[in-house]
Structure formats: C-alpha cells, structure tokens
Amino acid sequence: MAGRPWGPPRDDGSAAAGELEACLAEARAGRPGAVYLLDGDAYLSLRAARELCHALVPEAQRALNLVELDAAASPAEVAAEVETRGLFSTGRKVVLVQEPAFLTSKEDVEEAFAKARQGWAEGRQRDATRRLLALVAKAGFQAADLVPEGLRAGLEPLDAPKRDKDLDKALKALARDLRGEFGFTLGEEDLRFVVGAGRYALERELKVARDDSAALDAALTRGLPPGHVLVVAAGKVDGTLPLVKKLAAAGRRVKVAVAREASFGAKVILGPTVSLLLAGTGKEAEAEAVERLAECVEGDARTLAQELQKLVAFVGERPVITAADVAEVVVRTAEDQFFALGNAVEERRLAGALAVVDRSLGAGGSPHMLVASLASTVRRLLLEKERARAAVGERKLGNPRDWEAQVFPTIPAAEVGKKKPFGFWMKYQASTRFSRAELLSGLVALHEADVAMKSGQDGRLALERVLLSLLATDNPPRSTP
Image (tube, rainbow, N blue to C red; front, side):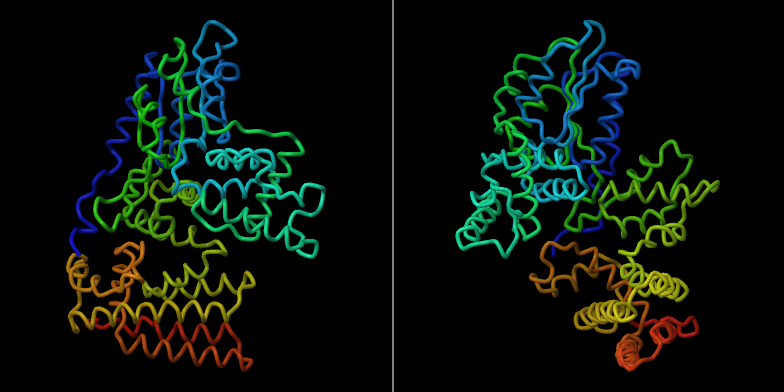
C-alpha cells in the first residue's frame, strides 16, 4: 500500500486559524467583508461564527442588530432577512445562519436527520419538524408527503395493530423514497418520527419553502446593503453547489475543522483544536493527554469540548491536564465502560482494569457482559499478532511504515472497508505487550470464568482472577511479539 498514513500533516490547523484571525481582525477594525462562510465542523464553525458576530455587533446592539436563523431557514428567507434594513439606520446588521440544510452535503444528511430526531425526542417538536422539513425540501417534499393518507385522521402514527395492507404499503413506499433521497435506510423509529413530524407540521400549517436558491443568489449578485453582513456557520457543505461557490466568491470562506494528516490513515491532529478550546482557561494539555483524547473522541469537536470542560474542572488549580486525568475522567461514563476496560487491558494497566470493573459492577453492570468484552479484546489482540506473525515471522515491527508495507496489505479488503490503518496498527502495537502464550492462556481463563459465573460463582472474583493472571506486573510482556 502506497503512502504514509502517519507522514507529515497536510495542515495542523494553523492556516485556518490564521484565516479566522484575519476575519476577526477586520471585523474589530470596522472593515468586515459582506459574507463569511465558515464550514467543516458544525460545532467549531458555530463557535467561530458567534465570536465573529460579537466582534461585529456590540453587546448593547445585539438584540436588534444580530438576527439568528436556524437550520430550517430557506435561501429565500435568508435573502429576505439580509436585505431588510435594520430597525435603526445606524449600526451594523448581521445575519447568522446556523447549519443551513440547503448547503448540507449528502454525506452529512444522516447526521442532520439524527439531530432533528433527537430534538423531537427531547420535546423540541417545532424545531425538529422545521429541521426535517428543510432536509426533505431539498428533494421537493412537503409535510403532506410525509404522512400517508390513512394516518391523517388522528390515529396513533405507527400503531401496528391498526395497520392494514394499504397503510403498510404506503409506509414502505415512504421509507423507500426517503432512502433514495437521504442515502440511508430508515428504521421503524425513524419512520415514527417522520410521520409524527409530518402530522405536527400539517396540524400547525408549518411550511418550509422549497429549496430555491434563486433569491439568495440574486441578493449576492446585487451585493448586500451597506453595513449588512451575512455569516453562515455550517458543517460539511456540498462544495459543488453553485450557492456555496457564490457565497465564497462574495466574501471569505474559512474551513473550521479538526485537522487530519494528509495520507490514507487520516489520523486526527487534535492538538490545535485542544489549544483553541482551552484558550482562556489557563490550562494546557500534555501530548500524551491529547493522544488519549484522540482515541476517545477522534474528530468529534462537540464531544471534545464537553470532555475538556470536565477536565478543566477536574484538575482544579493544576495548569496541565495529564494523560492520567483523561483516563480518570473521559472513560468514566457508563456507555464507555467496555471501551475503558479494553483500553486498560491493551495498555497492560492492571490497576486501571480493576478500577473499571469496580465502577461498572458498582453501577449495576453485568459481569457476563464484561467477560464478553474482555474476550473480544483478547481475541483482537491475538488476531493482530497472528497477522504480523504470518507476514514477518517472530520479528517485532516498531515502525508504522514497516507495518503498513508488510502487514496491512494482508488484511482482507472487506474487513478494512472505510476503516483507517491507524486503528489496525494501534491494535498490533498493543498486542506486542503480550506473548502469544499469554493471550491464548487469557482466552482459556475467560472461558473458565464464564463457565464459573454461569455455575453460580461470584462474577467480580472471576473477573479479577482473569485480570490478575493476564496483567500481573510480575508477569512482564516478553520481547518477542
């Protein structure tokens, strides 16, 4: 396989940071451009857009001179707002558009749909419905198209006992049509949301304009009124859309996202984003802490920001966030228990693994699930060790380039799929901390623990025995892989 997945980075984030700082500088100097398109990562883009808007409009004037439009705003609504004069003739008017659906790339539609469904589940029906209508408007759908005829008379949306063959057929057709437009399959709960939101829109006569970009295109061609500024905060946008090109040509387009390495591995370069999010806190993160955060959150900036807030509170007066802090805080959530246990085993940290077991069982977790998670981890380590053994014998590969050249090409393409080489390499690296015999013995011990627990033995005791035999410090990893 050609290329270096861990070679020189294409961009460490400094170029985008420089562009963003240039935007802020001209805003503070009172010489802003007419349009700012910030895209790449929805969370980071909105964060940067708000900072830009606050530089453009003094706090005392924001209530009247800063207008925010949500994701469901159509191009026509944006054009109408940006061309409407402010309430007062003095001062600047700024229009901020958040994650506009009309610019969403196809690869980001599923995430946008998930956000709409989440809003519905959290009780924000109006916002969720508008988001959904904006998404389907791109394909020419209206609210009525989302509700089969038999579900418009007050019945429970998808109450299975009340369905007849015609209704089932209509629902399947709706799911098929949406799959063709969205690019992913909708499950039963997805359909419940779609139909429920469609009925909500019909009952309240909510409408979203069809995705006609002509009005905004014309406004950009004419030029915005003097003193008016349009700021668009988007996630991934479809760069082939004429409107994206028009917005960029009318002002500045700045990519705001977590940086990644240039080649095939596309490993995240989290350092610049961590520094950005820690700005003003008086804290910094050591390199090992950043690496552990990257393992936990990868390129999810929103989750990264949440975890950093916890870490800042956790370290208190200490100025530096360490890898130990990340291990203590970031993996503490219940949904991460199996991930945390696997990490501790891969790093051969007995104390860490025992602590995860203690927390998980204390929170009501199942020892049977922990045994299954441990078995999965050990099997994966053994698999990566055997792959390397088949390719290079007993020689240990300490350089990722050597591993990529000699081992990675042996992994079946169906297994690789869209996964990154870096993940496979990290598992191989973890496997070198154990001998082949240790991993095989670990699998046997896990099988015995499973049988013992099913025979009535204490689950905690069985798990601790396995971890002690596999990770004990007096049984160090051997030099051979």
